[in-house]
Structures are given as C-alpha cells and as structure tokens.
Length: 321
Ligand SMILES: Cc1cc2nc3c(=O)[nH]c(=O)nc-3n(C[C@H](O)[C@H](O)[C@H](O)COP(=O)(O)OP(=O)(O)OC[C@H]3O[C@@H](n4cnc5c(N)ncnc54)[C@H](O)[C@@H]3O)c2cc1C
Image 1 (cartoon, helix red, strand yellow):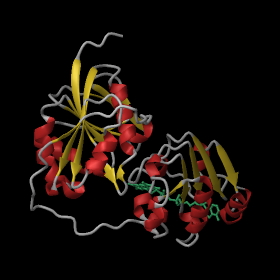
Image 2 (spheres, protein in one colour):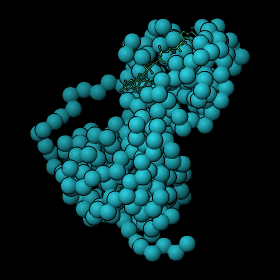
Image 3 (tube, protein in one colour):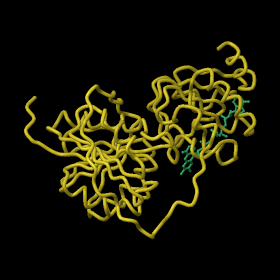
Image 4 (cartoon, protein in one colour):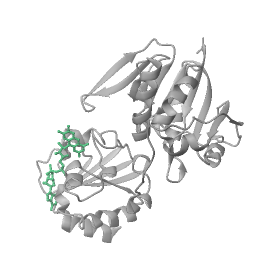
C-alpha cells in the first residue's frame, strides 16, 4: 500500500506510582494501527517533576522521533489545570494529539480540546483511516463510526483493545522543553495508594483478572479472591455493587463507570453480569463465571461456567492450584 500523506503525532506519556505506566505501550499499539494509513512522525511527551527516568524509559519505544521532556514544578503531579493550556499550545503544531482513555486522559483531553476549540474523539477502539475511528456507545452495546476533519485530531485510546508494542534496542533522543508554568487554580493535597492493589499487576494491563461481586458478602471475604489472584498472578476487580457495599476499593471497579479490562482470562465470582459490568470486561479472551444461580446473566458471556457456591468452589480451586 502506498502511503500518500505525512503527519505528526504527539503522544502524552502517562505515569503511575512506579513511573512509566504500561498503558503507554498499548496506546503506542494504536499509533501502530494509525501508521497503516499515514507516514507518521511520532513525538512522545513526558511532563512532571523529576521525570527524567520516565523519559528515558519512553525513549526505548521503537519508531519514534524523540521524547520531549518537560521537567519542573509546574508539571508536578500532572495536574490537568496546569497541563491543559500549555499542552493546547504544543498540540497545535501536530496533526494528532493522543493519550490513553484512562482517568488521567479523561481529565486532561476534554480540557485541552475545549481550549483548542476542537471536538475530541474519545475512547477509540478501532482506527479505520487517518480520520475515521470507532468508539463504543450505549455502554458498549453499539459501536459508532466517527469521521473528523479538524486541524488537529485529538484522540483518547481505549488501551485494552490494542496490542502493546515492545521496547526496542535503539534509544530515541530525549529533548528538554520548558515545563508548564506554575498555576494557582489547584494543588494536590494528598494521594492514597491502596496497598493490596499496588502489589498486584495493574488492573487494566493484567493478563488475568479475578473479579468479585455482591455474592462475596463482605470485604473480609474478598481475601478469598486475593488468595486466588496470588495463585494466578492476577489483578483483582469488583462489581459496582461490591464497591458500593464497601467490600472493595472503587479504583478496582470494572464496568461502564469503572475500568475497562480485556485480559486473557477473566474470572467472575459471585457477580450477576449486569450490562454495565459486561461493558467493562466483554473484550476478555476467556471468561469463567462462578455463580450459584444457573440463570445469572454472566453465564451468557462466559466461555466456562460453574454453578456452585463460591465459598466451596474458591477454596477448592485455590487448593488445586
Ligand atoms: C449508570 C450505571 C452505571 C453502572 N456502572 C457499573 C459498573 O461500572 N460496574 C458494575 O459492576 N456495575 C455497574 N452498575 C451496577 C449494575 O447495574 C449492577 O447493579 C451491578 O453490577 C451488580 O453487581 P453484582 O453482580 O455484584 O451484584 P448482584 O447483581 O446482586 O449479583 C450478585 C450475584 O452473586 C451471586 N451469588 C450470591 N451468593 C453467592 C454464592 N455464595 N456463591 C456464588 N454466587 C453467589 C448471585 O447469584 C448473584 O448473581 C451500574 C449501574 C448503573 C445504573
């Protein structure tokens, strides 16, 4: 295929508690899809305070021109109030501005879009051409095809559906640029890390996810799932009912109003399979459901179903594993 046009993309690198978030490798998977339609020059943007190590990791991503690193107190904690006007100025020079459709991206991209007076295309799950994208609507029950014709195309990527790129041998240049200026609109007062969660694989990047629902009956009983997750090197997720009941932290909620996951194996335990939950895990490769109700809707999306009391089945499974 002959690629007729050249274009440029700026990809905002996301950081987590460990530094470079694995989500970035999946966002770059989407960039690889875009490359099928245009000769793409890609710059990565790392912004923050003391973020040189993240920039050095990002520089090992193959096929990029350079990593722009904006290191300074104005970018500390990547507060979107500080980043958005600064990023809007930067982004005008590019054909594409791309980031993950994560809590970070959902906070930042709409602000940048408003400042640029551009309609963003959010939650992209497929790239059909240089300007045509698919995104889910109605809690993932339908896909919408969006065509955009704007000076800069602003995209947020549903990372779970794209294949992660691998780090390469070559290291791209890391170029320092001026960080965002300090601002007084907002500041970070405190940050709480859920310990049990950070010791496990990141939920949206995990190969295996074990999710629990209201059927677990209590937060203490969720320990059963953590034991099972330990055996499988899995991340733990939860239904909204389990989160609302206080059994699990809300940052592990899976679903329409939680995280979207697409692991190789999703084990749903004591959760009914409401459409809002399915919206967050329907792209999982293999789904296993354990529920005592044979009519639970989760069995309709499960590849393997076990009609059983979870308090008998999970200890047996842990024992066998
Ligand atoms: C706008 C909106 C957004 C929403 N977003 C989300 C979302 O992001 N994520 C989400 O999950 N939900 C979401 N919900 C809520 C959703 O509609 C359901 O209420 C919720 O998913 C139900 O959680 P559950 O399956 O844990 O609980 P339930 O529906 O109560 O199911 C519990 C299941 O456990 C089984 N069970 C009970 N005891 C046992 C046992 N001992 N052994 C085995 N099985 C047992 C029962 O048979 C039952 O099927 C949303 C709702 C709305 C309206």
